[in-house]
Every structure is written in structure tokens, then in C-alpha cells.
Image 1 (cartoon, rainbow, N blue to C red):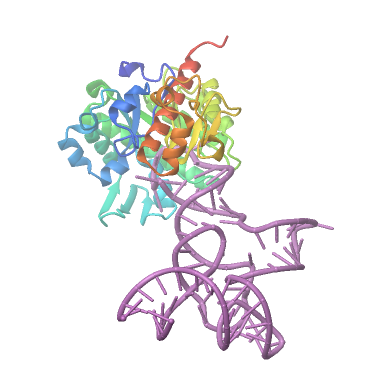
Image 2: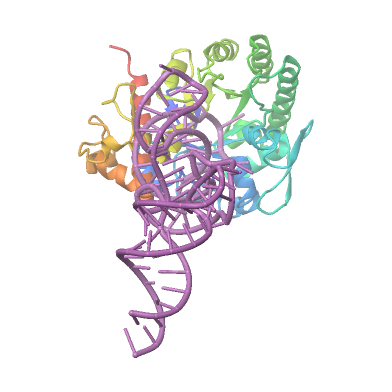
Length: 345
RNA sequence: GCAGAGGUGGCGGAGCGGUCAAACGCAUUGGACUGUAAAUCCAACUCCUUCGGGAUACACAGGUUCAAAUCCUGUCCUCUGCA
């Protein structure tokens, strides 16, 4: 697929946060039908570091990956690690300053440095640094987040264009993140102001589900309605299979979620044989089940192994169990994406 | 046979007079996970219950005490050392 066509069709990107989809080789990843992945700026910054990534020829060479790479900006980590005080650091007007829990080294993530790092990683699709926060924000907090996100997006774009020549020179795409929490007017304002800056894609940021676990479709729709029709819409972190279907219906084309791979490792698999499509492989009932996880699935796991085998391998903590489960879930998601592309009968 | 040490929930293992249905691990059984600090986390795990409790329980049988898994006596069993 040509990069310029990214997001014209539905696409699901697994998270290869640190340069690998956990428990999978690049070859196994390709075999699931995956054509694009997400890696993370902040994780790769901490290890192996931006300079080292560049020295090694970038993520694609390192992974031997010939598909598309999208780098998340680190905005979400700013939220989940620094705002939540899991890492020591602080968020300020200029970005975030924080200490690596690994080495104690102090890092400064700014809109400009985020772009620099993403360039050094060798990303195809960059994401602007955003000020992501928890749910249930007060209006003031949400407003501050929106204003900062817009300002940082502006700085990212300026830097990307001045320093690297922008999309024209690099052939890379730059997408931005829309914040605004659950305030539709703030979402709208954020979407409109970002649209004026003309990005290649618009990503729905913040938390995608409410406290009840329901996808925030209304907020998501505001963003679709207030961003350019011809640019891709990326629902970051979405989601459960049904959430992806619902988001697709209102106009989102690009998806990623940790659920697919994390659930696999934790024994929550997907199967069209099961009502509700969730199969908890660790449950006792599968200990002697000789059937494949999903009778309609064409993945390596389903073609070669039984539910009982995956159950047993996961139960005893064999890495192979994680691998087989991850392969299946990823393939399930890729097939889900294929069905979205087909017109409803 | 003699001398030590010891027998606690499915397993390992704390507790050594009251706050013990008994820490903690493991196993088991459910559940959660949504831009990955996650091969993680949560819950249940003697029986009954109208969820307030109730009844049995720490090898077995007695005993001391207001009160025993904890102290005493006997029985059975296990391990280590010496013959």
C-alpha cells in the first residue's frame, strides 16, 4: 500500500510499542495479514534511545519490517505515567520533563523533540505531541489540555516543515490528536483549529471509553464532523471488536489497541463460534477441547492446534502459548477489518 | 531399639494461650484489561446461611484453663543421627 493511500481503507495496526509485537517475530506478524504497526516514541527514546535507533538504520531495518510504521508521540505516556505519578516528572507548557525509572536519566519531551525522535526512529506516520489526561476532567482542565494540544501540534508541524521539509520532502505523513475530553464544544474547537493547520490525519485522543466501558461515540462523531473529509480518521486505542465496528460506522478508518495482544496473553481470545465472540481459553471447559479456537479462522494457530493445546501452554506459562494466542487474536482482528471493507449484504 | 526433630487448609509453609476459619506462596475456579511500566491485576477458595451470622476444624484420644493450632498425658505416623 502506498503511504498516500493510508487510511483510505480500513486498517488495524497492532501495537509494537518497543519494536516488536510481544511474543511474535516479524515473520509471524506478517502472516497475520498485518501491514502496519504502531511503535512508541517514549518507549524507544528510553531504550535504545533516539540516536541509537538512527544509528541502527531505523525501526524498519531493525525489525526487518517492510510495512508501514506509525509512531505514537508519547502523549499518552505523558498522561499514563507522569500525570498519574507513576513516573516522577512533570508536564508543563513546553512539554514534559521526566526521569527514566530505568536509569534515572532525565528526559525532556517537547513538541520539537518528539518530532525529532520520531524521525530518528524512521516512522512513516508521525503523531503530534498532545496533552492527554484522565477521564472526568473539569472544564478548566479539559480546556487547558485542548489549548496545549493545539499549541503543541502547531509547534510539531512547524518543526516538521522547517527542519525536515514536511510531507512534501519526506514523504511521511503527520497526524494530529484531538483532545477535549467529554466536552463536545471543546472537541469541536480542537478539531476545527487543528483542521486549519492542515494535517494528513486526525486522531481521536483521550479516553475512548467512559467509566462504564462504553465507547464515547458522540464525542468521536464530533471529531469526524469537524475535520477534513479527505483525511484519515484514527480512533486511537479502539478497541473491542464491536467498538471497532461502531467507530467504523461513523467514519473512522484507522484503529489500534493493546487489547488484541494483551488479551491474548491473558487468555481472552476471540472466536466467532462463541456468542459474544469472547473465548476465555484458560477456563476449565477448554482443557480437553480438541477443536480449533475458531472454526472459521485461517490463522496458523487454528490450522495447527486445538483449544486444549493453547489452554495448556498458557496455563503452564509457556511462551508458545502466548505466541499462538497472539497470532490468533491478531488474525481475528485483521479478518474483522476485512469484513468492514466489504459492503453489507 | 535409643536419641533428637516434627505432624497446620489440595500442596508448601507461618502462627506457639485469647484479636485464628488460621499470614504468605503455589495450585484451583471465575473475572478484568480499550494511543502497553501489564506473560499483569482483582476476587473466590471447610460446610450451611434469610449474608446479620451459625456449625465443625490445626494427626488421633483424653486433660488443664474463663479461653487451646498453641500447655500436659497417651496413641499412631514421618524425618534425621547412632546402633
